[in-house]
Image (cartoon, rainbow, N blue to C red; front, side, top):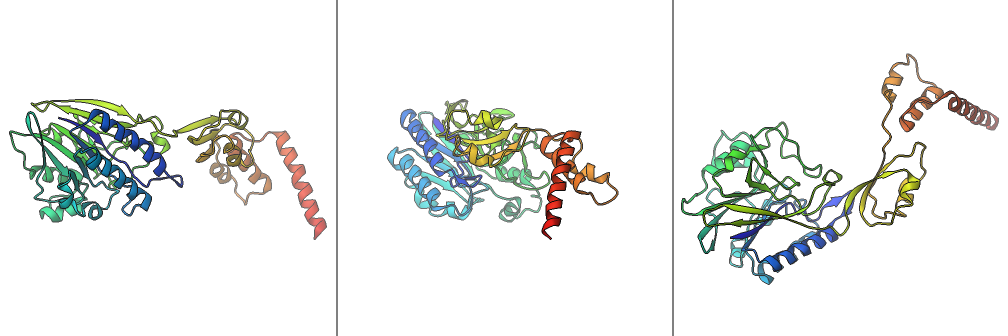
Amino acid sequence: MKFFHTADWHLGKLVQGVYMTDEQRYVLQQFLEAIKEEKPDAVIISGDLYDRAVPPTEAVNLLDEVFQEIVIGLATPLIAIAGNHDSPSRLHFGSDLLKKNGLYITGRLLRQAEPIILHDEFGEVHFHLVPFADPSVCRQIYTDDGICDFNSAMKRIIEELPIHPDARHVFVGHAFVTPNGGEAENTSESERPLSIGGAEYVAAELFEQFHYTALGHLHQAHYVKQEKIRYAGSPMKYSISEEHHAKGFLVVEMDGSGQVTIEKRTLVPKNDLRTVKGKMEEILRQKPSDDYVFIKLEDESPVLYPMEKVRSVYPNAMHIERAIPMAAATSETFLAEKQSKPDDMDLFRVFYTELQGDKPDEETLSIFTDLLHDVLYKEDENR
């Protein structure tokens, strides 16, 4: 059996105040073309279909278009679960009715949920759909006060799944899985934490009994402890922390014994999201681009109206910051040394140090003194 594994579409995503819907449509069109060409037996989406519980209309329409094309146009079964960004109730609505057309979507965690069973020439493949659920929700569903974190919640969920010995099994989930259930870094700044204080991590060993585990939540494609426990990653970049991620989806082929081979397929964005470094005069000489860029200015002197200038070359520029490192003496340490209220010269030294990354020399201080004298003299004349 061949199936596509994707996750974390985040339809309706805002990046630095810009809706990514057109960009998402562009990469999802490539995804649809891949389904047409490779004809998988199923498509899996491991949560976070939307970026928020109440998505904008354009995002809902886009998901509807893509789902219709996959399920009806291409006659491909689609298996999806809710992630931590989704509304469980909204995604679960009509799920029993949709099953008849090959759309298997689970928004809410159900204790007695039966697996989705698909067939190939070797027999049955059971897909276990486990949407994101907070430990407090799991505690109520299983009436188990021993569920205190995400790991204990997942352990209890898996213990009650119907695992038939003669079938092959695929787990579809949305969680922060790490090799040993310990703390690990997130792969993106755009993904919100599931909890505070380290209770969000789930141990990879819980999934060893499954022939393949299709995970969502972390935005960089990777495996956890074993090749068969996989994150597909998001289909496009959603923050500058994802700048160097290779975005796409996974093609999984499972043989009769449950052994899997996995290949990565890349998706090419309409406009990339990347960092541009340099002095303003260098940036203004670069080839114009519609990429979403984060600018790091290396100018030593202040630049007036930097975003206005940058957007003459990069109209979709999202953010500008200075790349010059701060001096060892920051404003806080400098002012802490002053026993009395800082005067104008003190404030100028602090301002200059923060802006330039170095203390002002005597010539600069002399020029500022003359300018300050002229300003104060003219104020006295006008009184």
